[in-house]
Amino acid sequence: MIFALMLATISETNGCDTGCPPPQHEGVATFTTPYDGQVFFVPTGDMIELTGQVTGLPPDRNLGVHIHETGNVGNHCMDAGEHYNPENETHGGLTGPNRHLGGLGNIHTDSSGRMLFDLSVEAPRHGWMHDFIGLTLVIHSGQDDLGVNPDQGSKTSGNSGSRLACATIGFRHRTY
Image (cartoon, rainbow, N blue to C red):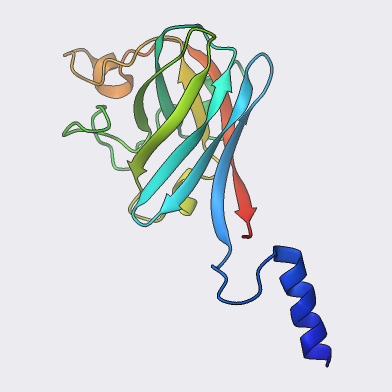
């Protein structure tokens, strides 16, 4: 009787009776004034899907987007450190031969300054949770050149310009 009551309580709290998937761990970056929006990091096998939107950005622009090495968003995002690059790779695009884990390429803003995230990236070798949670998602003021130029800025950061908006990637526990 007590077991049945406990089971009913558990089912009621997560909306699932039997054969339920295990709780899924996700990440979320929440942007605040003057920007607004959330970007979700959802693991799917050996990939991580990034979905969501950020508003209040310059309209009709390709802007470089990166994960930076710390979770500190102070000093106009400068305290977030450099691009996340634990394997010391050269900067590049998502589909190019060179890419460090922090490089997410460019995302276009629409005519109202809204950036929609809908991309998949390869999960870090050590597991995405270990690597991305606590870091910072940064939107830069310029287009990322994807590391194609010979200068050092291209090879490390894609010459993406100043840091426009940033948010720490936090832990999100979701039960279905």
